[in-house]
Image 1 (cartoon, rainbow, N blue to C red):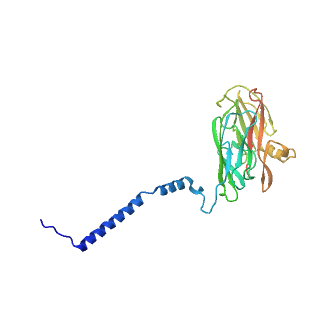
Image 2: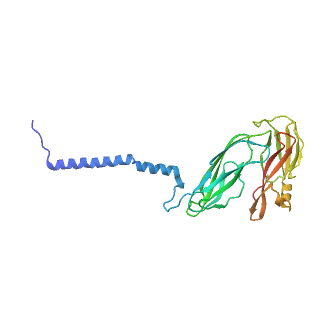
Image 3: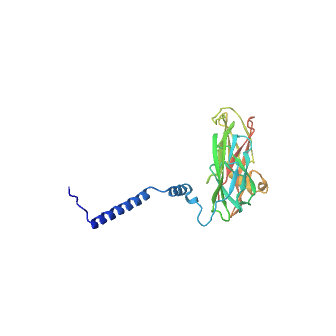
Length: 286
């Protein structure tokens, strides 16, 4: 059989086409299959997002919280609010200013004002208070906001988780009161309840309220009590010479001067299992 030979020019053209096809396929393969380094970089960007340090050398704050998780057990609606201490440690090389914090529940917050500075290697003891609002198991978190030289502005550094269960023989509804926009008075029901918070029609009496800014309302039925918070009376007490020294008040500074931020009312009762309970009353910002 006769064999046809391919001329040299045609062979060169075919070879060049095959080489070009190989280069194209290799390039397509590199584009469709990322390298391990590319994959890792993408995952880091996804996890950190905008919190990733910039290439300018900005670093994250070095603030450690100890313990990071607190188990309080049962928090009762009777008596004073529950408090505990956590340690904030600066394990970095520059001072850290704690500008504030964000709590997932207003029922839990540090009891001192933010704005304090922790020097490198120092430990700051921070008191935290928990108030019994909603009955049952609770789990809340506080995220600390910090700033300082060489740190990301308003960075989150340090986190605290607190678990507890609210129980008690008396339940205030609402447990915390915010000043109404227009009304001078606000009634708070205080009911006799079972450990799970359900109503118990068992008679008891409210004996008094301190400070005296909330008259006692007559009971509607056995197991039901109520107080009528008088916001004008709270304003008058806060403006009086004696009001400035009352531990029940929490104060804040405003452009118009010092004003009361909240007040803790102590309700005394005839119930042996709960001789007194607390009701938190908050002022409106103005």
